[in-house]
Image 1 (spheres, rainbow, N blue to C red):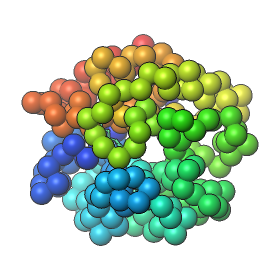
Image 2 (cartoon, rainbow, N blue to C red; image 1 turned 135 degrees about the horizontal axis):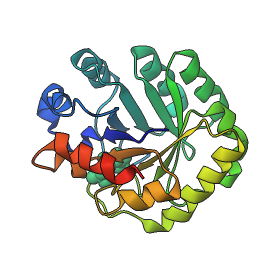
Image 3 (cartoon, rainbow, N blue to C red; image 1 turned 30 degrees about the horizontal axis):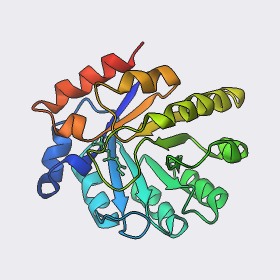
Length: 217
Ligand SMILES: O=C(CO)[C@@H](O)[C@H](O)COP(=O)(O)O
C-alpha cells in the first residue's frame, strides 16, 4: 500500500484549527487526538470540535480515542463522519462489538496498542480491524522521543497482518520524524502520524512530502 501521512493536530494551534487543517492539503488524513485526562494525563477536545472540523476540511479525519470509555463514544465519532476511529486495547471492554459498530457507521475501525502492550493476544481480532495503531511513545503528549523498543513489535505486527491477508493498515504514532520514519517503514508501518515534525516545521506541506519520500522505499 502507498505510504500515508496523518499530521496530528495536537501540535497545531488549537485556536485556529480550520486554518491549521488548510495548511496540510497534501495530508492523507488529519489525525485528531481525543484525550479525556483519565486514560491519559492530558485533556484535548471531543465530539463537538470534531464535528466542527469535519465541516471545515475535506481531508478525512482519523480520530484516535485516548479515553477511558471508548465503547461508549466511538460509534458517535463514526456516525459524525470521521473516516477512521481508533480505540485502545487497554481501555475497550467490548472491543469486538465496538469495532463492528465503527464499521457499521461507515468508518474504518482502528485498534491501538500502547508501547508495552503485546500484539500477539490480539491476532484473532485482526479480521475486525482496518488499521492497527502501534504507539511509539507513551500516549498523552506530542513532542516525545521515539521509543525504538517498539520496532520489533512493528515487525511482528506486519507478519501477523500478512498471515491474515495483508489488508490491515499499520499505523505508528509518536516521535515519528525525519530521523525515525525510515526505521518504522522498514519494519512494516505504512501509515505515519506526525505532530511536531509537521506542525513544528516552518512549512508543513514540505515537511509532509519529505516524510513521505523518506518512508517510500
Ligand atoms: O497520540 C499522540 C500522543 O499521545 C500523538 O498523536 C502525538 O500528537 C504525536 O506527536 P509527535 O510525537 O509526532 O510530536
